[in-house]
Image 1 (cartoon, rainbow, N blue to C red):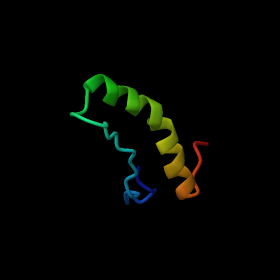
Image 2 (tube, rainbow, N blue to C red):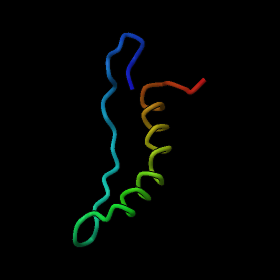
Image 3 (tube, rainbow, N blue to C red):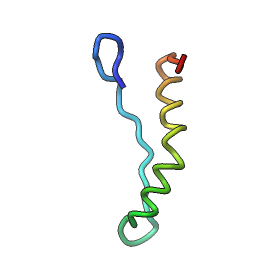
Image 4 (tube, rainbow, N blue to C red):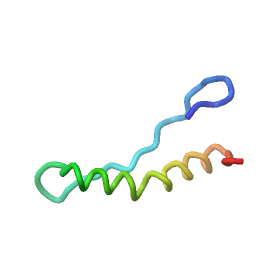
Length: 52
């Protein structure tokens, strides 16, 4: 996301860390689906923005 002048806002993330082994593609996709909306809302709130 960027502001009206094209300056990017700091990144936000929620990293999937499996208990053991590597990251399974399906688990990664499910994790992205589960956290994407909350991360987006969090960034909006951190910068006093809305979707309106």
